Image (tube, rainbow, N blue to C red; front, side, top):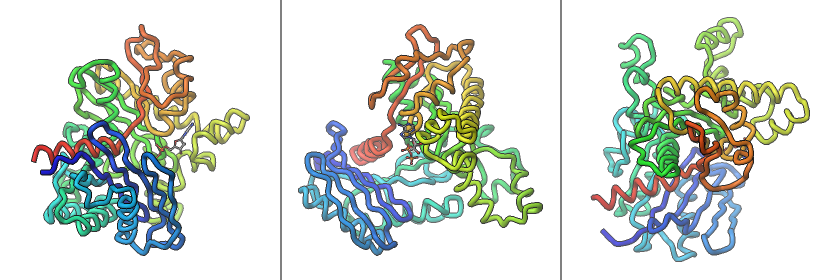
Length: 401
Ligand code: ADP
C-alpha cells in the first residue's frame, strides 16, 4: 500500500453527493463540497478547497456518474485528483447494513450485491448509496473503497432491545427488528465525550442526543451501544423536523380505515408532514424558538412536545444504563439551541443532572461541558463529525489490510 494519508468520504443521496477529502495525518479537510439536484434541471456543484476560494458550477448533472466526474475534476484542479498518490481510500456512507454488516467493510462485488439485497429494508437510502459506490469504483477500480454503515454501531443492541414484541416468525421472515440509525455520529460523539471527560470510553456510560433534522438518542455503556431510539426505519423515537417519531401503530389503521388514506399517504404524512413541521408549520428550531418567544401558541406547543419526548427518552435511558456519567448533545439543534438543552435538563437535579446557565449559553464550535463541576452527570455539547469518523474507520481498515 502507498504511504498516502488522504481519504475521500462520499455521502451519496438520491439527488445529491456530499464529499470531503480528509488528511488523516491531522484530520484536516483538504477540500469539501456538495453536488445538488443530480438528474434534475439546474444542478449545482459547490467546491471549497481548504486554502482557496469557494467555486460554484451551475449545470445539469445527468446522473451520479456525471456529478462524481465533475467532483473529480474540481479535486484535480487543486492537485488532489482521484489519481493522486496521496489518496489511499474512498469511504462511503451506507445507511443500512442489516444484520450482516456490523463493521466497516472493504467493498467487493459481493458486498455491493449484499447491500443491494437490503434495499427492501432501506428503499429510500441504499439505492443511492450503491450508485455512489459503483460510480466511484468505475473511476478508480484499483483503489480500496470502504463502506461505513449507519446501522453498524447499533448492532450490539441486546436482543431484548432489538426485537419488537410481535410474532417472531413474521418478524424473521421480513427482517423486522430495531436496527437504529445515525450510528456513525453516536459512535463518534460517545467517544469524543469520554475524551472530553479525560476518561477511557470503556469506563463511561453516555446518553447521546443527536438532534438534527432527523433526531435520535442512544444509550452507550462502556463504548457499547445498548439502546437507540430509531428502529426498523428512521421514523421511530424522538419528535423530529418533519417525522413524527413514536406514535401508536393503531394510528396507521385508523387513518386508513376511518380517514380513507392510502399507505403511501400515511407514509408521507408521518415522514414528511409531521414532527415540528406538522405541529407548527416550521421545522427549523431557530424559527420555532423565535416564534415561541413572541407568544405564538403553535410554536410553543411544538417546542414543548419536542422537549417532552426528549425528556421521556432521557429518563428511559437513565434507567436502561443504571448509571450515567454524561449526556451529550449534538447536531444542529443539540449543538446550537441552548434553550432546548436547558428545557431538556430542567428539574432533574435529583438524577444528578444540572446545567450551568452561563456555560450553556456560550456559543462555541468546540466540545465543551455545560454542567457545573460538582454535578454527578456531566452535560456536554459535542459537535458531531460523521465524515471524520468514516474517514478514520476507512483508513484504519486499509492500513490494517
Ligand atoms: P441534518 O439532520 O440535516 O444533518 P443538522 O444536524 O444540520 O441537520 O441540523 C439542522 C437543524 O438544526 C435545523 O433544521 C435547525 O432546526 C437546527 N439549527 C441549526 N442552527 C441552529 C441554531 N443556531 N439554533 C437552533 N437550531 C439550530
